Amino acid sequence: MLSSILLLTPPNFALAGAFDLASNKFCQVGKSKCVELVIKEMKRRYQPLAQKCDRDALFALTYLRTTETFLATLNKIGYENPAAIIREDALFAEYYFRAYDAYHSQKGKVPPAWQVAFDVAQNRACSSAGNLVLGFNAHIQRDLPFVLYELYLQGHPVSYADHNRVNQFLRKVNVVQVAKKFDSTIDDSNQNPQQQFQLIAQWREGAYRNYERLRDAKDKAVRMRVAAEIEDNAAATAAILRKAFSYPPGADSSQQDAYCQAVQGIKPKGIKV
Image 1 (tube, one colour):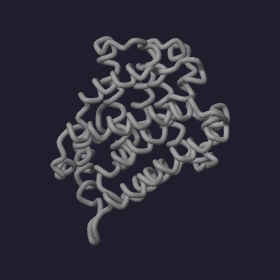
Image 2: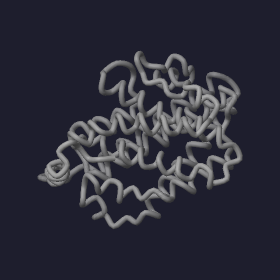
Image 3: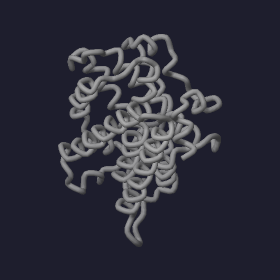
Image 4: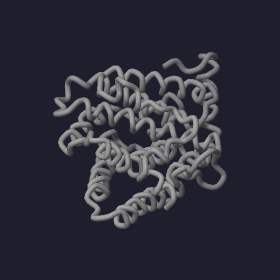
């Protein structure tokens, strides 16, 4: 509940020393240069994770490739308000950076869904697919409604039409192919890219509806209840996913770790982005 309160008063959620990207002048006005800055920061954060075969690298790389695809398609999708989507891209990334920094610095409150995702990655407690879907859950089901609401409070709302247009470029990102950089067995589940996308699209739809519930709440008390429900739902989903993707008895991450380390042996300075 506390993290919900913090997020409904955005200035209080700004962690000490947190990377403040959304306030950059290019991001404030919604210029494409802002997306380039987001990508630059993502690369900076991703490289050391890759060099250590850190399990957080799976989500970090997938998020990086997704943002690169967003930039590459920015002028092709036909957004009604491209500046709004660019602002959303920056603030959305900042929520992830804040959660990551709070967890790894042990300073500040970590949203429960992110706590589960980061714990599992740090403990190498589930499959690579699990690391990814736990990150998607925390970032989409938990973060996205609050991001959309914060943009609304700033006077820069994202329309439902443009929200749905984002799915056009998301469909182009083959999550499994990206993650195979770290784990050659990640596609053993035989789940095709369309199935992966449908889950993301479903969660994004729910996130927008939860944003509308925050926006349209009749008073602060109702809004706080909605915020708590968003937190609780994402945390409950994380608990289910952690169990579903945990290694069976006698199994662990050694196969995936060995694969990643072999790649690192070929490229001793880290996996090139």
